[in-house]
Length: 120
Image (cartoon, rainbow, N blue to C red; front, side, top):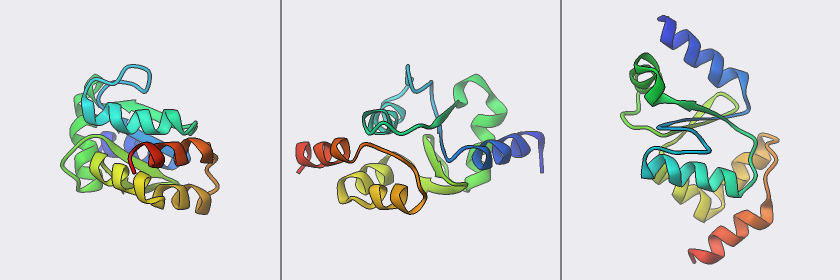
């Protein structure tokens, strides 16, 4: 594994929920990253964020690691879940709630329901 690949692997396996994004959870730097971080923040999920803009090796390395061409990328318990469109769909369908429940990740169920009500 390359150095970037090793760092990514350790990060993904070292936290229950990790979002590789452009910017930070407090200050996203693109609309797609903002959408996913906004969902996680609103739902009260405790997650690690990795700013791919701050490290070119990570920015390219995460795409190679997941074999997924875009950022953001969400990982839960070491498993790649998806990017913005997939996370949006999973949030609206309730699949993301199920994935959190199945993996013991705490989140605000009322907030998740409010997202669905607002977009229903």
